[in-house]
Length: 281
Image 1: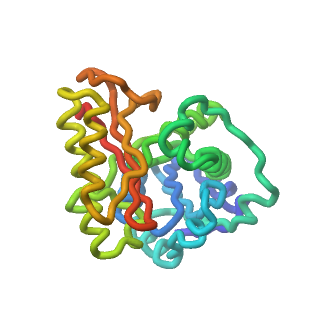
Image 2: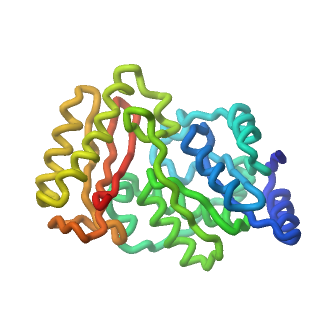
Image 3: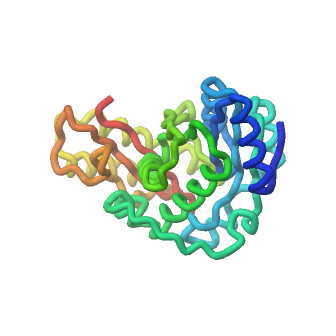
């Protein structure tokens, strides 16, 4: 497994592999890898000749300095996991390497980034779009793999790829969960034992929303889901929304045939957890 720290080295490697006929699968990450990330690497491995993973904690997508500072960084462990998983190359640049100059680019995603994460974390998705665009330009993958846990991010990345004219196929991969349903996340390691135990309520609320969706209107479902989560003393809902799976706009009524998804962000102390679940399953 090769490790590259400069954009030029990674681009040259990708060009050589592509010219030799190998398809390239790409898994962008911010490190602190867990089984969810490794499942993306595994799928990329099965569907491509070569696999590249990036590890870069992107400062442009953090709204709070303290969140950026406390984000877990476990590079040596991550590299060992990726080598064991059969990754061919890892791109782990410094912030200076990625952003030698101040980034002023602004994307217009219409209503996609005005709701949920976008409304609670202004500028977050612009930072995501900037870094993913740069990574796609550097790595030039045939396919890039993203987890469905960050559903709104997935929709934003697909829109950005269309806007920028990338030929990369953006592939969505199922959320990997712990045995009690909690979505795997790099932030989970920051949970206390009690917070971790109660965090499974988030998935229970999402499952309950799916059970109720054909029978109750979204407002009533939201109220029940929020009450279920907030009944846990260490959890507090920031938002719980039932939205159209394509436009991400809130739904006013339930329809069994409509593509709908329940999305939520929940605080466990200072740890912010997000999750979602299709309501049409």
